Length: 237
Figure 1 (cartoon, rainbow, N blue to C red):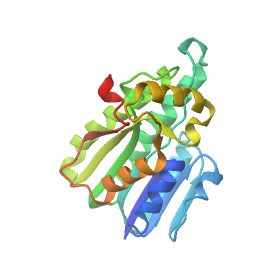
Figure 2 (cartoon, rainbow, N blue to C red):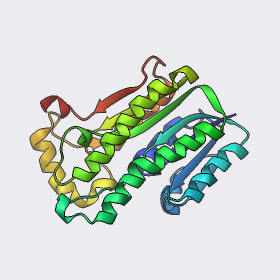
Figure 3 (cartoon, rainbow, N blue to C red):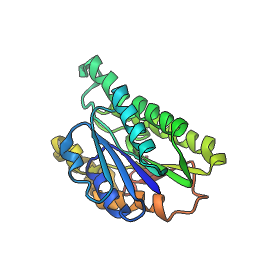
Figure 4 (spheres, rainbow, N blue to C red):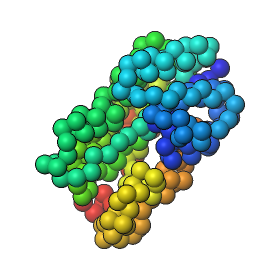
């Protein structure tokens, strides 16, 4: 029996789970609030509403995987919060929370899953990064730093887990038109028009198609890799 793990049930995660329906018998999904979890439809869904920064919540995720009686076939790391603003205006607590949510706590959860749960041969781990890790976006210094850390971690993890036949990749996405950027959409439309060869924001379905491909169909030799999906923006850096 195969298990899928979802950390962060935002727009992209919901679209990916829809595409992966039928590839696994159980999906265990974590999000801070119950509402996003209602978008993850399908039989065998176990929803865990809670903060990934809470050790008890991470323990509940591991326990749910163990009690499913199966082995982990894929993990999606898509949880993320922003910290928009110039560095001198971002509260220290926000800096700490952003690093904890985007980097530290997902790493701790993945550490526990790798240590304490069964994994399928050929399992896939895919994280959602951002081009802000390497290409500065307006007033997103802290957010970009967290994504740089996550991307570096996942590429290194892919090398480490290769002997266990676990494939790890990270999608470095451009600015995607989703609820995550709603508050700043006007500014980012202008940025995309000026700085992206495609002259538009990315779409949720485009990111979901790529992540689902990396989970289901991509060759195992595509591993420990940062896959860029940004409309050509990074090429102009």
